[in-house]
Length: 106
Image 1 (cartoon, rainbow, N blue to C red):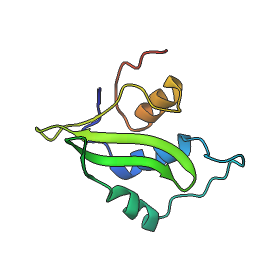
Image 2 (image 1 turned 180 degrees about the vertical axis):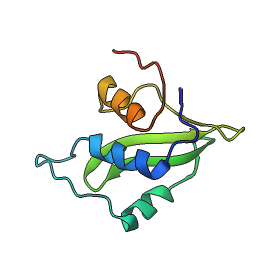
Image 3 (image 1 turned 30 degrees about the horizontal axis):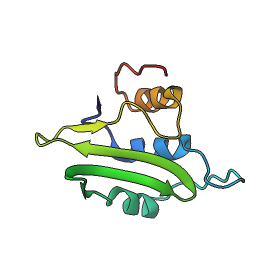
């Protein structure tokens, strides 16, 4: 797990969306508006007995596949691999958000 406590959640979410592949044959990119960001950022809750801050699956036709989990102490974490994304994309996301982490290449 990679700790991402303290990141700007809106900035993180927009970059996840930007780096994610399209789910259909035409690669369309529609910018996330403040309204759609409000919907995405309100998707927290409990999943598999773990509290999560953000759970992005498919957003506006893009396979985001990103979840931020929250520990009992209030710290945020993501997986150390990103489904349907390369390790380079994960590195780019973390660098963009100012997170220093050792991301291993597969």
